[in-house]
Image 1 (cartoon, protein in one colour):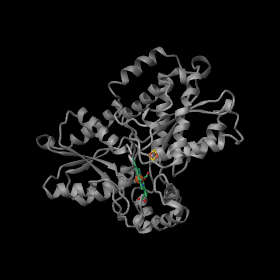
Image 2 (cartoon, rainbow, N blue to C red; image 1 turned 45 degrees about the vertical axis):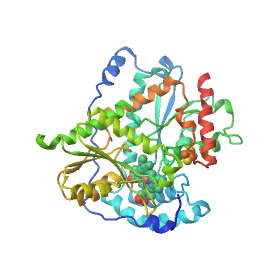
Image 3 (cartoon, helix red, strand yellow; image 1 turned 60 degrees about the vertical axis):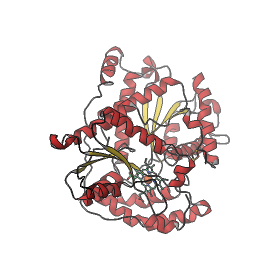
Image 4 (cartoon, rainbow, N blue to C red; image 1 turned 90 degrees about the horizontal axis):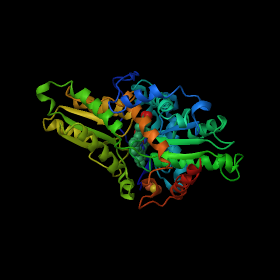
Length: 429
Ligand SMILES: C=CC1=C(C)c2cc3[nH]c(cc4nc(cc5[nH]c(cc1n2)c(C)c5CCC(=O)O)C(CCC(=O)O)=C4C)c(C)c3C=C
Ligand code: FES
Ligand SMILES: [Fe+2]
């Protein structure tokens, strides 16, 4: 990203603390129609899973990768300092190690206020631990051949970090012996080099440090075999989970106006420099939106808009806040905002959408669809994505092997070579 004045860029953000909304955990016990019968029938034929009795390929580590967020306001400073140190997200060139800490220090008080306003921290750790452990319980039932499945969380900027997760994997015996199997499962449904790509670069770095040549665990026969679930933008279970949350919110409008409510899908924006490098995220987000609209039989008019841009450089638009304001000005005051690129609540839903965009719109007809959080349909979708991957024999998607046309990063090159190359090891497992 070309930075004219990096410090002011990242410190000119809106900041207003108002009503606090606590993030109560409310798992929906709704079963997906296409997954539940399959699961029920398998549960009747498959005996309880024990590693010795039923699994030939297990145990399998299921590693949920995400950015993470500060669980308390005290953690905001360190969260931002890690975020601004990440050259895959915010490239500051040779000045990264100087400017990163400076910008994050300047930004911390404002962002602390925002986390305080959503109840004192990000709920992402709570949701990631819940989603991963619930998914593993389902996997033990539907994939006995790779059981037991052990859940891990690896965050890019908050605890537990990738290095902590990797140390736990080794401690739990996944390295050594004949070498264990681990699946890096991105929790970003749509791939971006600044999100999933950054997490994979970090995973590759720690794999090299902890298990590569010259490391204390360098016995190649005992290394962990890795594969990656790198994107799942139109998985039917994901689409179903989003669609049900939209339908639930649509049902709160009087029947006579329901079909005229505008559905505003909102995704985190990207700097245009990243878009122009060839990042696949915008196209994959659009694919999710279209799939959800297909599932809803195009019942309502809709738009995709982009939120959370940081600083004055060019970002992908139209911005969500402008979009809401413009529609309200045009007299369209019944709108449902749908966060479409993240699978649980975070500061950008609970603060930016709820406490800024919706609050400022000042119309009761402007609402938000619930995030996926503890949705049972969603968790069953995760299990379905995982089981298909485990049975595919693939180390990653075909798409992941191709770098962006504008990519100049050695990290991306080496990381992709590594994960694509794991396919040969998977074949002999
Ligand atoms: C799909 C989701 C996300 C994309 C793509 C993404 C790109 C991106 N983000 C920044 C800069 C910041 N992001 C920050 C927080 C943040 N970002 C996402 C998601 C995506 N970011 C989330 C869910 C969160 C909040 C985490 C939580 O609360 O749990 C922040 C920190 C907050 C702030 O200072 O405003 C920054 C900075 C860039 C530059 C970028 C693309 C290159
Ligand atoms: S930036 Fe996309 S592959 Fe490197
Ligand atoms: Fe972000």
